[in-house]
Structures are given as structure tokens and as C-alpha cells.
Length: 155
Image (cartoon, rainbow, N blue to C red; front, side):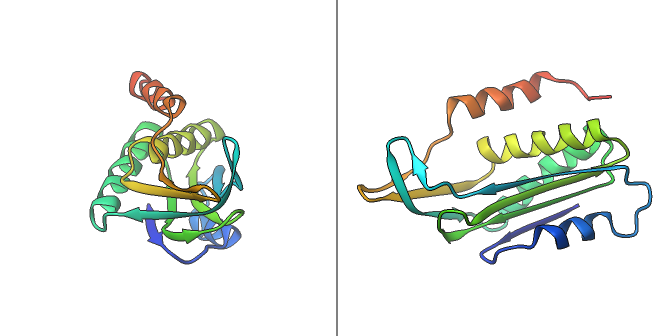
């Protein structure tokens, strides 16, 4: 299980190779890469700026990865979340999970992504031609996270 909070970009292929390296039990890997969009509502995004609270962020992500590992018996997980100034099409986040079977890999990856969208201690400021604003969690993302709270361990 590995977590990185960083300004630098990442190479998805290298990260996935490292996740499965040396573990012949891995039967499935699922990955998600989040990108900066160039639009928001009715405006064009020039950039976003992401901040976090060092130490607290890693601890919170470690807790959620541990929960995913227990729920779905993961063989591995990798989360990279970028901070700092990002522009449209830049990669923001990588979530990758490895398990014996695809069901566990898909569910655990989605669970971690939903957590990142709702409860991870990151703050995102979006800059458009009309100024900047701090983004708040969307109701639809909160509903997704509530789904996981109600769901018991997947088999």
C-alpha cells in the first residue's frame, strides 16, 4: 500500500508495473486517473490550485486504504494525488488497486475515489476568466460516499 502527495506528474504505466511487481497472486488490477477539465458549469477553467495539510492528508489516506484493504482483501493499492498549480488535461490523481479477482479490484478502486472526492483533506481553488473560487463537495459525490457507508464487506 503506497501513498504519494506530490507536485510532479506521474507515469501511469510505471506505477501499475510497480503495483503488481513480484506478486504472482494478482489476478486483477483496476486504475483510475483523474484529469483537470477545461470547463466548469458555464465557464472555461484556466487552472486549479490544490492544497493539503501535510501529515494529516497522508494519515487520512492511509486509513481509507486500510479500510479498502480489509473490505476487499486487496493485494496492493497505490494512490498518488498531486498538489500545486495544475492546468487543463494535467493528471491530478491516480488510484490503483490489485486483488485476486476483478470484482474486488473494481469496488475498492471506486471506494477510494469516492472517499477522495468527499472526505480527503484537499482544498481545490478553480481559476476561470471571471476569477477564482474554492470548490465544495458536490451532493452527488456525498451520495456516492453514503452508499459505501451502508454497504458491508463485498464478497
